[in-house]
Length: 329
Image 1 (tube, one colour):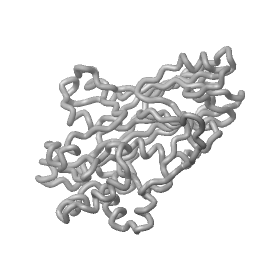
Image 2 (tube, rainbow, N blue to C red):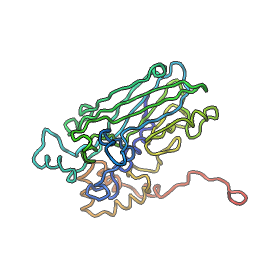
Image 3 (cartoon, helix red, strand yellow):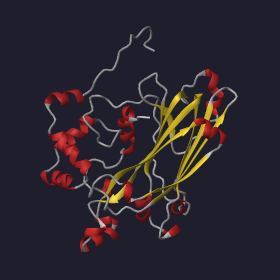
Image 4 (cartoon, rainbow, N blue to C red):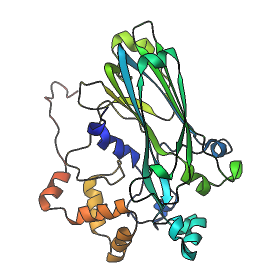
C-alpha cells in the first residue's frame, strides 16, 4: 500500500523533540537527547530502575473480506554520530566516537515493510527476526558508523464473534550490547529504535476507530490493549484503509496545518513564534545551526527566506464558526 498521503503526519511524530530551539547541538536542552517512543535494547532497558521501554504493542480492529491483505511499515530513527565513517576516521574522529559529549548524533530514518494475507495470520501467527544493518542506510550514508539492530516482530490475527478481526502487533528491540546490562544510556542510544511507530494499511477491508467505534464493535474495542503507541485512523475522512500507531496519542484523521511552511520539531509551540525567535539569533548562533544537523540548517534557510505574506499566514486562521445560542453553551 502507498502510505504517501500520510507520511507528513508520520514524519511530524517521528521528529517531534528531535532538536529544539535554539536548534544548536551545544544548547543544554539538546545535549540530553529524548524522543517519544524510544525502544531501548531489552538487555539495557530491563536493567534500569524504573525499567525503560524496549517494546511496543498494539491491538486494533478491522472488518475484512476473505482475501484481505495487510501492509505494515515499522519506522524509527537510528542515532548515528554525524559525519563520521570508519573508512576515514582520524584521531579526532576516534575521540568523538568514544566521547558522546563532544559530538552530535544525527537521526537516520530506518524502515521495515511487510505485506501479508490476513487469512494466513488468522491461521498462524507470524514471528519475524529482523536484522537492520548499514546496508539499509540511505544513499550516501553507507559508510557511517551504524551498529546492527535486531528486532523481533510478532503479528497475530483473531476472528471475533461480532464479525471483526482483532490484530495484535508487537515490536521488541532485541539488539545486543557489548556492555550488556551494565551499558550506559549513551552506549544504548545508537542501538535504540527512536520514535518507533507503525503504519498499517488494509486492502479488502476497513479499520475500526478505537476512539469512536461503531456501536456494533464497542465491546471489542474496549478490550484492545496498547502499550507505547495508540492506533488512529489516517488519510482522508471517511476512508478507513490506513491506521497510524503513534507514540503520541492523536485524534482520528490528524492533519498538518496547511499554513505551516515546515517542521520545527516542537508541536507544543507556534510556528510564528519559533520563526521570529530563529530570526533573532546572533550570527554566531546561526552559523552553529548551519554547521550542525542538516535539518536544523534547513529550518534556518527556510525562515530566512520567508516572505511577508507567508508570515501573515502563520499568524493564525479561523477554521470554522458556529452560531452561539441562548446562554452561549
